[in-house]
Image: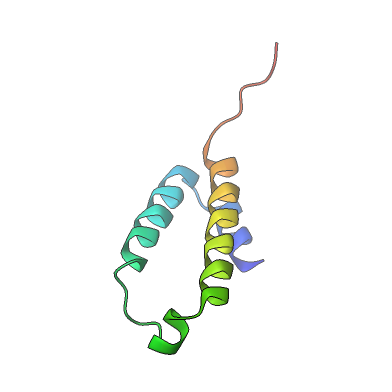
Length: 69
């Protein structure tokens, strides 16, 4: 809920989406996760699903919708 509130109140959702994508790229090389967790397929799948869901939410906020005529 906190992330949704941040996204909805951010003055520039497109900038927030860019920052999120950069963070995703950085996380691939991030070794701050314990090695035991890095080897967990379940954790990896849940993190991937969260990242995809969150990216989709940010895209909805960042990409303006054009009303149908």
